[in-house]
Image (cartoon, rainbow, N blue to C red; front, side, top):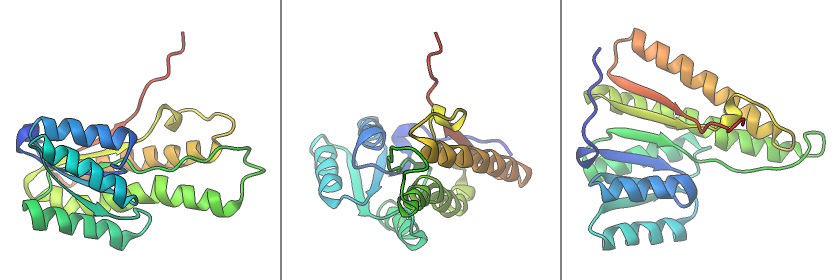
Length: 195
């Protein structure tokens, strides 16, 4: 099925991990271009500040406090978006946590938490978003890293989660294409300069 994405100014965009970093900048840029933006993260203070700044510049935005490792929290993000703006056109899974150290020295509970957020959080977001995006078409964007293609020391668990996210995203893209659903599926990765 042909994928036709709306112009940014006509979109409702959900962004997880939107209280800082890539998620916050993406939300700000989308709002500046006229999108209605739903910012989601665990940090309510930073979310409220981000939304206040967007509203002060004439943008349209709301926030929803959520831990993406909890499927019910992710469903609540979608409910908030639809309740406020009527639909979802783009869903960006960006939430992630950092964990540095040798794999043999990291506590297993911390490694599991990182996977719960960095991998399962994107899975929960993807599976929540698909039914909404399938209605009128839309875009699903999973934010990975160059480390989805390469492993490095001291970030082995992060690399493993991003490798898993890449495989999940590629498989989901093929399945949705076979089903003829009008959903663009993208794995956003930065490229390492090898020169």
